[in-house]
Image 1 (cartoon, helix red, strand yellow):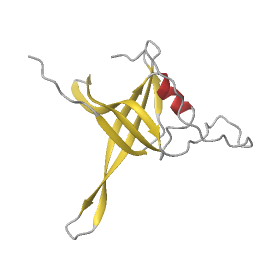
Image 2: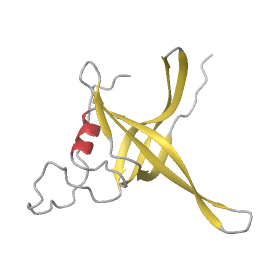
Image 3: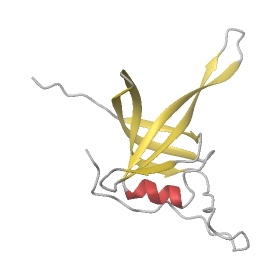
Length: 141
């Protein structure tokens, strides 16, 4: 008997560090970043404070590589993502490790992007554009 389940995640927040891109043995780009997601909660004295949760996010394919290369996924950038949860499990040094992460299906930039560091500072600033529309059929799962 198969049970239906729902695995959908929608978050918005700020990127904690510049995104990192690495590659599988087959050459598929994997872009990783942490997203700071805040929740406002009331304290015992009646005031409010933000409670921050850090969420590990992974984006497979050329789209993540292009977004990172073009300065969209930099530290502090505000983004919104949709995706699904995946439990990564691996063994290292005889110990089993687990990490819950969001596999990003869609990403929307909510701030202007930073120019790539390879461009010369004397060039005129680039106009703000929407994220590159690159889609990849080479997702490894």
